[in-house]
Length: 122
Length: 115
Image (cartoon, rainbow over all chains, first blue to last red; front, side, top):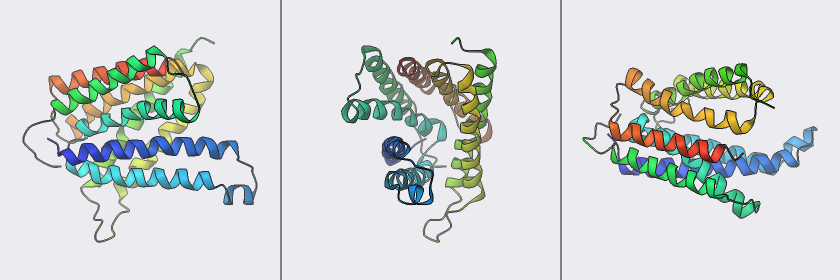
């Protein structure tokens, strides 16, 4: 039901879109509503670029497996955002969040486990 | 502020609309030909449009409720996508995949509830 590389691509795509969110946040903080304000807002371009790259990677990834197996990998964005927030913004990670991260990882593993079987690509 | 019913209903409708996005992306993925430069596919646009619409629907909902309640609600999208892929993409679900989705939703609720 799935190719292994497809899973990896989904992880990469999710990581990129999570990082993009931080650039958006930075872009929003330095946003000024003027032509030059938007034109020279570097974080906005980087964020948009990462997002588009992520979308293209997802398009490729989806060729390699079932949507019902691959789509839930997007949930790892919560993990990336939590970790990046802790590292970049020094946000505290509560026990609840750690348990949540563990639950998401366990869930993705189960889905991967349940996706083994005959490959029928698309 | 207690989360109002209409906000919850709006978010749920938004998730149904939003869940059609990945279905469109999956359809687009088999039609796109990167080597021929054929990347802009009608299903790809449809997918982006549906995602955009559902995101926009989410914004007024935030006026009627707490983010820590509404954000985890979005995780029901994983259920919609699984159902829709069985129905529209002829994919197969099984006990393991459903258990995995339950664990993912639980994790999202735990993380989202601390927002």
